[in-house]
Length: 182
Ligand SMILES: [Mg+2]
Image (cartoon, rainbow, N blue to C red; front, side, top):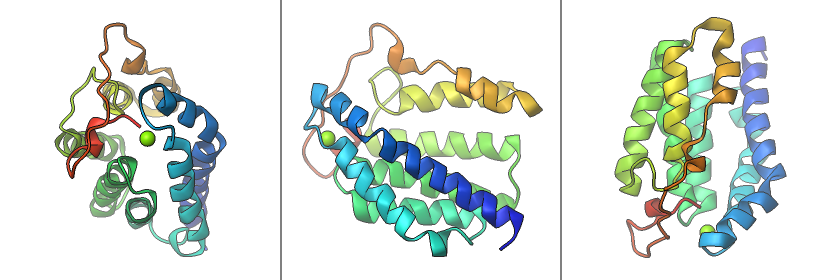
């Protein structure tokens, strides 16, 4: 295993573990507007990802992220599976095609992923969806350079905190999941 593969494995494990560690918080957020299953569903999905790390962890970054996405789509279900899954699949596709991770690659991947999620969820910024986090992070990503990148992203203001956002509840039906935030 190369150092590059190790980084990919560590990155994906870190994402999975932080989601799992915050499962209760995610469930509480979902309880306020939905059916309080978000933490359980995402934990199931990211445990499925961790269970496949022997395979996923040795893939190139782009393919690994795509594989995380398809695993989430298969295992999370409901509203979140397709949304989180397509996010990873879309970013992974860009990483795969680019062959290397650069700021431009990340920006293009983010733009495409946001476009995909807006269409899938029929949502826009300001409706208390994941877009309220992803769009400000992408804005920061466009404007920063080099070593400042991670610090700037950590400092990005999640739009979900803005006053005046109107939450949309989950809607049933084949296109409903994207309308929910959780
Ligand atoms: Mg829910």
